[in-house]
Length: 185
Ligand code: ZN
Image (tube, rainbow, N blue to C red; front, side, top):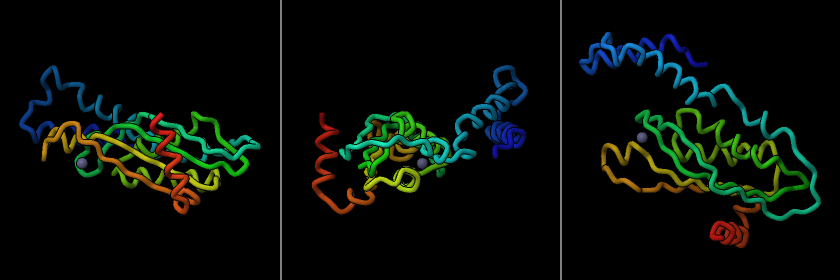
């Protein structure tokens, strides 16, 4: 649970540490603003994907479902800087599917926390396996990290790609090929 008072105090201290005058006009409301913003950016900390993946629909078919280009924004836990990009999620239903928006909601639950991209990818894949119980899941994330582009090695445009497979996707190469073909279209 976010403690807005503490964040506000910490933001003021941070500004002081930077040698700023926290009382000057432009900064007066900044600690409050940061506290409100953090509440939004880290809203996923109080959420579970369960609430989004619980409601499923029965289906006859068993073809792959791929939702691609789900835009996400997250914050890296090493530098508190944003990383953002796209998530691509595929699963093989075992008699049931979820509403398409629920996949994006699941991404949101985990993206709106302090994260590293590898863990974010793993958590999305595991949540789908746990709550939707499909025959397999494949999750790919591609993202740009501000801690790599704005500071440090300063390489703008560098994309970090992470991949997780579960179930049949981990066992059958053909299914992974199908995923890449569907991504290309
Ligand atoms: Zn970082």
